[in-house]
Amino acid sequence: MTFNELAHRFFAIAWHEEAHPISRSKRFLRHTDADAARFCESISFDRRLWRHDILGSIAHATMLTKIGILTKKEQQAIVSGLDDIGQDIAKGKFRWRLELEDVHMNIEAELTRRVPAGAKLHTGRSRNDQVALDTRMWLRDEIFRLAREIAWLQRALLRLGQKYAEVLVPGYTHLQRAQPVYFAHHLLAYVEMLERDRDRLKDCFHRVNICPLGSGALAGSTLRSTVPWWRACSDLWTPAANRGLPRIPWTPSATAISRSNSAARRHCCPSIFRGCRRM
Image (tube, rainbow, N blue to C red; front, side):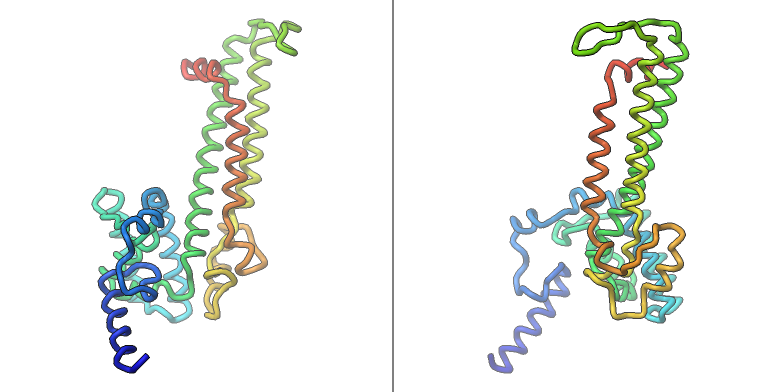
């Protein structure tokens, strides 16, 4: 390839990257095919992670300031820009762009458009650890929500049992009537089942609550970056000895939560729910 051809390719790539700031844009001279973009996008469902993505970016900006990559003024501008973006999203004013694929690229591109220093924010991190961080934070919130709802159901079952403490119902085994039992005891069995479901969620929480900050694409970064921030936020996360490899995968944790939810659904009798709603 001649010098002129190399120069032409360089300027074509530079123009394309500026016009279409998408992932891997340096690899291609033309815009992504519409069908391919629709196949690759995740913004239609991962936009729900926007709060967690903004919090993670603020945390990362704080770390970059601690090690001198960002000035204090740049950090303040980035945090302010992220806060403004968050308010726009909450109000429904933010325009999600399909060609930017996911929540991380959408927020980062808009931040860089509003705050030039936002271009530095990706230093020392990857979308891999962004995905891991956002998903783990979202799963933590979902675990808390599910645990609260299970506790609400347990209290409702207890109130229902107290209301009908003297009522007897037939107990069944092998699809046949066996012994008369108190209706309250029948309800308490569900309370205990649901308590085991809550215990499973607590176990899932410990699996999820591992901080991936500083993991980068896979196994950390050459920057002297993440140790100070990791120590600063260690009170909010379960300590992890390795800085990268074990903390990036989040799928096993999500699968464990799905299994726990499936078990809990088996213990949710529609007829009991109707009774609890009337309590």
